[in-house]
Every structure is written in structure tokens, then in C-alpha cells.
Amino acid sequence: MTLYDRLIEQKDAEYKEFQARLIPNISPESIIGVRTPQIRKLAKEVFISDFRDEFLNDLPHKYYEENLIHFFVLAQIKDFDECVKKVELFLPYIDCWPLSDQANPRSFKMNHQKLLPYIKKWILSQHVYTSRFGIRMLMNEFLDKDFKEEYLELAASKKSEDYYLKMMIAWFFATALAKRYDESIKYIESRRLGEWVHKKTIQKAVESYRITDEHKEFLKSLR
Image 1 (spheres, rainbow, N blue to C red):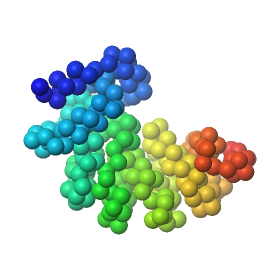
Image 2: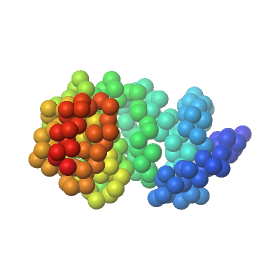
Image 3: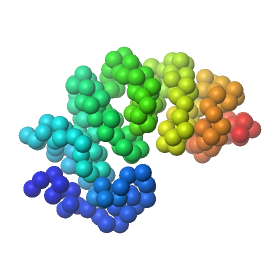
Image 4: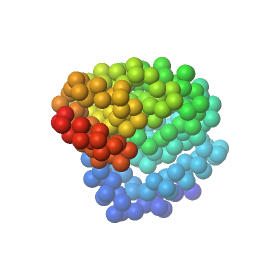
């Protein structure tokens, strides 16, 4: 049974319709309709299979779920150099926000010094979802123990009119306000993010349970 057969076996018509509404910028015909837990399970099977390399090299994939499996397979690679090389090969094929948002490569967490130059390069990319992935990795990996205030500038300096990229920048700064309030509030006070991202950042921050009521009230005054 092929991977496609396995996906078809687990398709859910209602879930496909839901996914098609959630990701309007890709063709509904490219969506089979398989739920994420099943996708992750298949990715684990592909990772240990004898056809893993063949699958990873068979680009572009036809279906959204194949792309998800691809990224979930890459996330399991323990060697950083191998993982990041394969991630870079795959990033140009990412064509929607869920693909850029769900994979969290294990090797990235243990190799921040080596990862940072890649993140900077990805953020500068003109490919929307490569840039979005770079900002998400910056958010995931560098707002805690390895944080430097200069990293906020990497996200703030990214300019785009693309909805999905602007939303990622707002998500980044809302998370930064939760984790690094004193440093990140400066970007809101000085209105550095552009009007739409500024307002969306405040909205997301105000909705967050991780931000104090006092900080939320101040943020509301900056709308």
C-alpha cells in the first residue's frame, strides 16, 4: 500500500471542507482531508521506512498532506546539519501558513548558535512562507534563555503587505510581550510595527492569559 493509499484510507470529507476554508489560497483539490494526529503517525512511519529518502526527494508533492508529512519527517532528524539542509530544500515548496507553522525540528533546540544565521536569512526571504517560518523559529527558540533585544528588531524590520506574514509578526510580538514585556513594549509605544500589525499585536496580547491585567490596560491605551 502506497503512502497515497494510506492517506485516502483515512480521508474525512467534512474535515477536507474545513481545511479548504481554513487555507483558501491553495486548491481544494490538493487537500485530501486527513486529520493531524494521523498525519503525525504516518510521518513517524515514513521516517523509519526504507523509502524515506525517495519520498523527501520527490518534490514537489501533489497533496497538502504529503507536504505536512514531509515537514514532520524533517522535524525528527536529530543531526542539525542534515536537518537544516533538508529544511532549506523544502522551504520554497511551502505554499500555505499551516505548513510553515506546525513543524518544530528537534535538532534546532540544541543548536541555537548554528541556527540563528539561518533564521536571519529566512526572515529576509521574499518567499512569504520561508519568512514566516523564520519568524516563527525566532519566536519559538529565542524569546527565552537565549534572548537578545536585537532579535526583536529582526521581526520588526520585516515589511510586507501579505496577510499571513503580517499575522506572524503580530503573533511574534504578542508572544514577546508575554515573555519579554519590558523590551518589546518599546516597539508598541513607538508604533514601529505598522498600523495593522500594531493593532493586531495589541489584540492578541490582550487576549493572552500570560499578560497581566495591568499590562493589558496599558496596551489598550496604545491602540
